[in-house]
Length: 320
Image: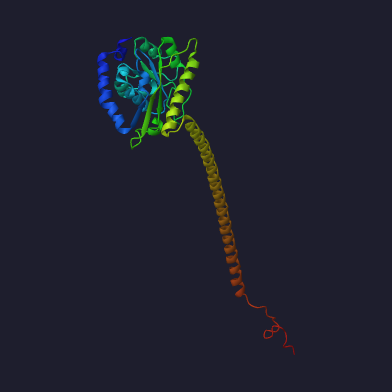
């Protein structure tokens, strides 16, 4: 382990984290949430490195797990955090590093300078907290688990602690900056440590881990009145349909508005043309009227025709 990684196993750093977690982080989050912790007895006797995994739907998840575990299991516990989110600058990485002993995880996969860090930490005896979905759920519904954590359990021969977080998504959804007011209830459920079975592939072990967390979550959700994962899924599908219908209606309204504007523009064009035609006709009539009026005035000044042989009798009636 390089010098830059010594903080994960440093006793001094562990003491600093303990103080920060127990006297600042936990009181802060517990003052905003009504946290219920279940299943601690399942962790009795657990020692050595392990991988803690949980469903992920809120920024509350890491602190909830870290502050709910027994202190003896969190002395060196390191939390995997998205490299492209939490480690983009030293300032942004400060809080996760101080409170969560965070280490960078590349969500994109492939070649990375952080590749192998999780395995190295386990080899050094450092337990780690990972979220196998790879990112926070925006709906509350749990996605399939990626096989990475399961593969680490198999390759390093360490157990996994399944953890179900119930209510965290409702307390602080992905688009929220702070938990909702009123100290909403949140349940943290610890299951019994799981080991990979002989010959079990990482994919199958990941699916078994997923099913265990799902069972734990839904059992607690039903007992405490929270939505199950299926409820979240149905709500997400319903919202998807509603959003699609709303978008379709929006496009229809937009098309209707454009059609209405086009019709109004066409009507204005026809009205303008009619007004121009009327104005031209009025000008033509005025010109014709003016000309005709001039002819009438000219006719009024012409003398009547008089028979020169009978100047006093225009019709020739005075014929003697």
